[in-house]
Amino acid sequence: MTQEELDALMSGDIDLDDVEEAPEPEEEIRDDETHHETDETERYKAEATNSYPPPASSDNQVVHQLDDVTKESEEKASEIFDIIEGISNDLMEEEENAQRCIETFEANIATFSALHAKFPEIETFKEQMQKNEAALECAQGTVGVLQSSGDSIMQVMDIMQYQDIHRQKIERVINVMRALSNYMNQLFEGKVDDKARVGSATHLPGDSTTEDVVSTDDIEALIASLGKN
Image (cartoon, rainbow, N blue to C red; front, top):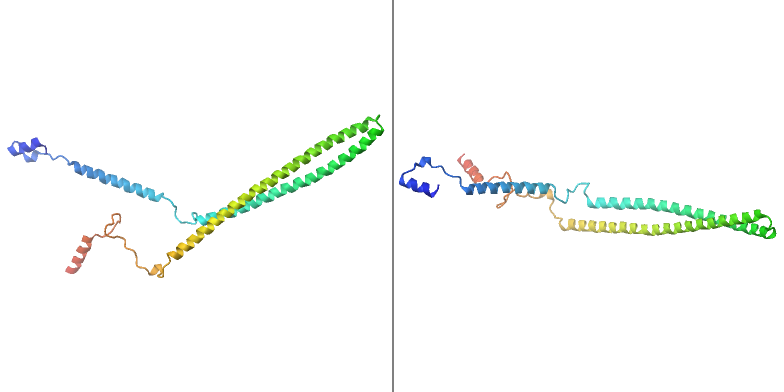
Protein backbone atom coordinates (compact mmCIF):
# COMPACT_ATOMS: atom_id res chain seq x y z
CA MET A 1 0.00 0.00 0.00
CA THR A 2 1.34 3.37 -1.00
CA GLN A 3 1.36 6.52 1.14
CA GLU A 4 -1.43 8.08 -0.99
CA GLU A 5 -3.66 5.05 -0.48
CA LEU A 6 -2.96 5.10 3.27
CA ASP A 7 -3.91 8.82 3.51
CA ALA A 8 -7.10 8.22 1.56
CA LEU A 9 -8.02 5.32 3.80
CA MET A 10 -7.52 7.39 6.95
CA SER A 11 -9.67 10.18 5.58
CA GLY A 12 -12.41 7.73 4.59
CA ASP A 13 -12.19 8.43 0.83
CA ILE A 14 -11.36 4.87 -0.07
CA ASP A 15 -12.85 1.53 0.85
CA LEU A 16 -10.58 -1.06 2.45
CA ASP A 17 -11.96 -3.78 0.17
CA ASP A 18 -10.87 -1.86 -2.91
CA VAL A 19 -7.25 -1.83 -1.84
CA GLU A 20 -5.16 -4.43 -3.65
CA GLU A 21 -2.12 -5.51 -1.76
CA ALA A 22 0.99 -5.50 -3.86
CA PRO A 23 3.17 -8.59 -3.65
CA GLU A 24 5.99 -8.19 -1.21
CA PRO A 25 9.40 -8.21 -2.87
CA GLU A 26 10.89 -10.18 -0.01
CA GLU A 27 8.81 -13.22 -0.93
CA GLU A 28 10.07 -13.02 -4.51
CA ILE A 29 13.60 -12.85 -3.20
CA ARG A 30 12.95 -15.89 -1.06
CA ASP A 31 11.53 -17.73 -4.07
CA ASP A 32 14.61 -16.81 -6.09
CA GLU A 33 16.88 -17.94 -3.28
CA THR A 34 15.01 -21.23 -2.99
CA HIS A 35 15.28 -21.76 -6.75
CA HIS A 36 18.98 -20.93 -6.61
CA GLU A 37 19.54 -23.37 -3.75
CA THR A 38 17.70 -26.06 -5.71
CA ASP A 39 19.93 -25.48 -8.75
CA GLU A 40 23.04 -25.62 -6.55
CA THR A 41 21.87 -28.88 -4.99
CA GLU A 42 21.23 -30.45 -8.39
CA ARG A 43 24.65 -29.30 -9.61
CA TYR A 44 26.38 -30.80 -6.58
CA LYS A 45 24.53 -34.08 -7.13
CA ALA A 46 25.63 -34.15 -10.77
CA GLU A 47 29.22 -33.42 -9.81
CA ALA A 48 29.14 -36.15 -7.19
CA THR A 49 27.87 -38.61 -9.79
CA ASN A 50 30.74 -37.84 -12.20
CA SER A 51 33.41 -37.21 -9.57
CA TYR A 52 36.76 -38.90 -9.25
CA PRO A 53 38.18 -41.17 -8.07
CA PRO A 54 35.93 -43.74 -9.76
CA PRO A 55 34.30 -46.53 -7.76
CA ALA A 56 36.61 -49.28 -6.51
CA SER A 57 35.51 -51.93 -9.01
CA SER A 58 37.66 -54.56 -10.69
CA ASP A 59 38.08 -52.25 -13.70
CA ASN A 60 39.50 -49.43 -11.57
CA GLN A 61 41.87 -51.25 -9.24
CA VAL A 62 45.14 -49.34 -9.62
CA VAL A 63 47.55 -52.06 -8.53
CA HIS A 64 45.76 -54.61 -10.69
CA GLN A 65 46.11 -52.36 -13.73
CA LEU A 66 49.77 -51.68 -13.00
CA ASP A 67 50.39 -55.41 -12.69
CA ASP A 68 48.80 -55.88 -16.12
CA VAL A 69 51.01 -53.11 -17.53
CA THR A 70 54.22 -54.63 -16.21
CA LYS A 71 53.22 -58.12 -17.32
CA GLU A 72 52.30 -57.05 -20.85
CA SER A 73 55.36 -54.82 -21.07
CA GLU A 74 57.65 -57.70 -20.13
CA GLU A 75 55.96 -60.04 -22.62
CA LYS A 76 56.14 -57.55 -25.50
CA ALA A 77 59.74 -56.67 -24.67
CA SER A 78 60.64 -60.36 -24.75
CA GLU A 79 58.99 -60.71 -28.17
CA ILE A 80 60.91 -57.68 -29.47
CA PHE A 81 64.20 -59.09 -28.17
CA ASP A 82 63.49 -62.41 -29.92
CA ILE A 83 62.83 -60.61 -33.22
CA ILE A 84 65.95 -58.47 -32.86
CA GLU A 85 68.05 -61.52 -32.01
CA GLY A 86 66.77 -63.30 -35.12
CA ILE A 87 67.66 -60.31 -37.30
CA SER A 88 71.11 -60.10 -35.71
CA ASN A 89 71.76 -63.79 -36.37
CA ASP A 90 70.70 -63.40 -40.00
CA LEU A 91 73.04 -60.45 -40.43
CA MET A 92 75.97 -62.38 -38.96
CA GLU A 93 75.26 -65.34 -41.23
CA GLU A 94 75.12 -63.15 -44.32
CA GLU A 95 78.34 -61.43 -43.28
CA GLU A 96 80.08 -64.81 -43.10
CA ASN A 97 78.78 -65.70 -46.56
CA ALA A 98 80.02 -62.39 -47.92
CA GLN A 99 83.45 -62.97 -46.39
CA ARG A 100 83.69 -66.34 -48.19
CA CYS A 101 82.77 -64.59 -51.43
CA ILE A 102 85.50 -62.03 -50.79
CA GLU A 103 88.04 -64.79 -50.31
CA THR A 104 86.96 -66.39 -53.61
CA PHE A 105 87.16 -63.07 -55.48
CA GLU A 106 90.62 -62.38 -54.06
CA ALA A 107 91.80 -65.83 -55.18
CA ASN A 108 90.36 -65.31 -58.67
CA ILE A 109 91.99 -61.89 -58.92
CA ALA A 110 95.35 -63.36 -57.99
CA THR A 111 94.97 -66.14 -60.59
CA PHE A 112 93.81 -63.92 -63.45
CA SER A 113 96.42 -61.31 -62.55
CA ALA A 114 99.16 -63.93 -62.89
CA LEU A 115 97.70 -65.21 -66.16
CA HIS A 116 97.35 -61.71 -67.55
CA ALA A 117 100.98 -60.96 -66.63
CA LYS A 118 102.19 -64.12 -68.36
CA PHE A 119 99.84 -63.84 -71.36
CA PRO A 120 99.18 -60.14 -71.85
CA GLU A 121 97.92 -60.69 -75.35
CA ILE A 122 94.88 -62.66 -74.04
CA GLU A 123 92.23 -60.13 -73.19
CA THR A 124 90.00 -62.68 -71.44
CA PHE A 125 92.35 -62.91 -68.46
CA LYS A 126 92.35 -59.15 -68.10
CA GLU A 127 88.55 -58.94 -68.37
CA GLN A 128 88.00 -61.67 -65.78
CA MET A 129 90.45 -60.01 -63.46
CA GLN A 130 88.58 -56.71 -63.76
CA LYS A 131 85.18 -58.39 -63.18
CA ASN A 132 86.44 -60.11 -60.05
CA GLU A 133 87.85 -56.83 -58.78
CA ALA A 134 84.43 -55.17 -59.23
CA ALA A 135 82.71 -58.09 -57.52
CA LEU A 136 85.22 -57.89 -54.67
CA GLU A 137 84.49 -54.20 -54.19
CA CYS A 138 80.72 -54.88 -54.15
CA ALA A 139 81.11 -57.71 -51.61
CA GLN A 140 83.23 -55.53 -49.36
CA GLY A 141 80.51 -52.82 -49.48
CA THR A 142 77.90 -55.42 -48.55
CA VAL A 143 79.97 -56.54 -45.57
CA GLY A 144 80.24 -52.93 -44.45
CA VAL A 145 76.46 -52.49 -44.57
CA LEU A 146 75.93 -55.74 -42.67
CA GLN A 147 78.39 -54.71 -39.97
CA SER A 148 76.77 -51.26 -39.66
CA SER A 149 73.33 -52.89 -39.36
CA GLY A 150 74.66 -55.22 -36.68
CA ASP A 151 75.96 -52.24 -34.72
CA SER A 152 72.54 -50.54 -35.00
CA ILE A 153 70.86 -53.71 -33.75
CA MET A 154 73.12 -53.68 -30.70
CA GLN A 155 72.19 -50.04 -30.04
CA VAL A 156 68.50 -50.94 -30.22
CA MET A 157 69.01 -53.73 -27.71
CA ASP A 158 70.82 -51.32 -25.38
CA ILE A 159 67.92 -48.85 -25.65
CA MET A 160 65.44 -51.63 -24.94
CA GLN A 161 67.19 -52.17 -21.62
CA TYR A 162 65.65 -48.88 -20.45
CA GLN A 163 62.21 -50.39 -21.00
CA ASP A 164 63.09 -53.10 -18.50
CA ILE A 165 64.32 -50.43 -16.08
CA HIS A 166 60.98 -48.61 -16.41
CA ARG A 167 59.16 -51.86 -15.71
CA GLN A 168 61.22 -52.32 -12.56
CA LYS A 169 60.39 -48.76 -11.47
CA ILE A 170 56.67 -49.48 -11.87
CA GLU A 171 57.05 -52.68 -9.88
CA ARG A 172 58.79 -50.70 -7.13
CA VAL A 173 55.86 -48.26 -7.07
CA ILE A 174 53.49 -51.23 -6.80
CA ASN A 175 55.45 -52.65 -3.87
CA VAL A 176 55.38 -49.28 -2.08
CA MET A 177 51.63 -48.94 -2.67
CA ARG A 178 50.97 -52.43 -1.36
CA ALA A 179 53.16 -51.80 1.70
CA LEU A 180 51.27 -48.55 2.42
CA SER A 181 47.95 -50.33 1.93
CA ASN A 182 48.90 -53.07 4.38
CA TYR A 183 50.15 -50.47 6.86
CA MET A 184 46.91 -48.45 6.66
CA ASN A 185 44.84 -51.61 7.09
CA GLN A 186 46.81 -52.54 10.20
CA LEU A 187 46.66 -48.95 11.49
CA PHE A 188 42.85 -48.78 11.30
CA GLU A 189 42.24 -52.37 12.34
CA GLY A 190 39.98 -52.72 15.41
CA LYS A 191 39.36 -55.43 17.95
CA VAL A 192 35.59 -55.35 17.45
CA ASP A 193 34.15 -56.93 14.34
CA ASP A 194 32.29 -54.51 12.07
CA LYS A 195 29.14 -56.66 12.22
CA ALA A 196 29.09 -56.32 16.00
CA ARG A 197 29.33 -52.52 15.96
CA VAL A 198 26.36 -50.26 16.69
CA GLY A 199 24.85 -48.73 13.56
CA SER A 200 25.69 -45.10 12.86
CA ALA A 201 23.00 -42.47 13.37
CA THR A 202 21.30 -41.37 10.15
CA HIS A 203 20.62 -37.88 11.48
CA LEU A 204 22.29 -35.67 14.06
CA PRO A 205 21.26 -32.22 15.35
CA GLY A 206 22.48 -29.62 12.91
CA ASP A 207 22.29 -31.85 9.81
CA SER A 208 20.53 -30.12 6.92
CA THR A 209 20.86 -32.65 4.11
CA THR A 210 19.38 -35.77 5.75
CA GLU A 211 16.10 -36.73 4.14
CA ASP A 212 13.09 -38.60 5.54
CA VAL A 213 14.02 -37.99 9.18
CA VAL A 214 11.38 -37.61 11.88
CA SER A 215 11.60 -34.23 13.59
CA THR A 216 11.70 -33.67 17.36
CA ASP A 217 8.11 -32.35 17.34
CA ASP A 218 6.90 -35.49 15.60
CA ILE A 219 8.64 -37.68 18.17
CA GLU A 220 7.11 -35.71 21.07
CA ALA A 221 3.66 -35.90 19.48
CA LEU A 222 4.07 -39.68 19.06
CA ILE A 223 5.07 -40.08 22.72
CA ALA A 224 2.12 -37.96 23.84
CA SER A 225 -0.30 -40.04 21.77
CA LEU A 226 1.09 -43.25 23.27
CA GLY A 227 0.65 -41.79 26.78
CA LYS A 228 -3.03 -41.10 26.10
CA ASN A 229 -3.61 -44.70 25.07
